[in-house]
Structure formats: structure tokens, C-alpha cells
Amino acid sequence: MKILIAEDNRDIAFLYRVALEARNHHITVTDNGEDCLTIYRQELKNFVSRIESIDSNEQHVFDTVILDFRMPRINGIEVAREIIKINPKQRIIIASACPRETISIL
Picture 1: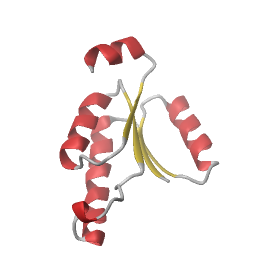
Picture 2: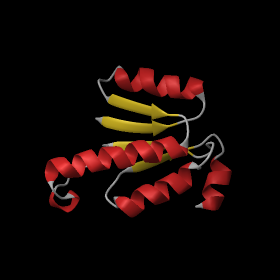
Picture 3: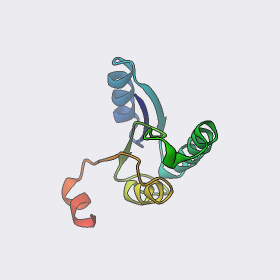
């Protein structure tokens, strides 16, 4: 699987990388929402140029995107909203150490 992760805590990002790469997944990690969106948009552009139209294929730019809820610059919810605007088919997971706060915003 190809996975994009936005996580500002270095220890958690390291754990994601170790666990997922051990299972042969291709991982891209960013430490903030802004960089995550930049990478996503670039990968989407490359993906669409390879298949000609995102609607013509059931594949996703990334198999999944894992977003930390609290991040510098742009939080995970805002990143998810932006990704869904440009690619409604994208699978996204929001992770948080503060589940009550996350649920109240959703």
C-alpha cells in the first residue's frame, strides 16, 4: 500500500514508519498539514497524468492518508476537507490523542 502520513510528533511518526514499512508499505511522512497537502496535490497531478482521468479508475492517489488531528499550520480536519474537495474518493484516517476534542469538532 502507498500511505501518506501527516504527524507532527516525531516519535509517533517513527512508529508509523517502522510498523508500516515492516509490512512492505510505501510510506511518505510529513510533519504538518501544509506539507501534506502539497505532497498530495503533486502526487494527484502525477497520478492523473498517468491515467488521464481520476474518474476513469477506481485506484486512489494513496491507498490511505493518515492525518494527526492537531498539527502545525493546518490541522488534520482541514487537510481532510481539502483532500476530499479535490478527490472525494480518497480514503482518510484521522488519528488523535484527544478523541473527545476530535469528535466534538466532527
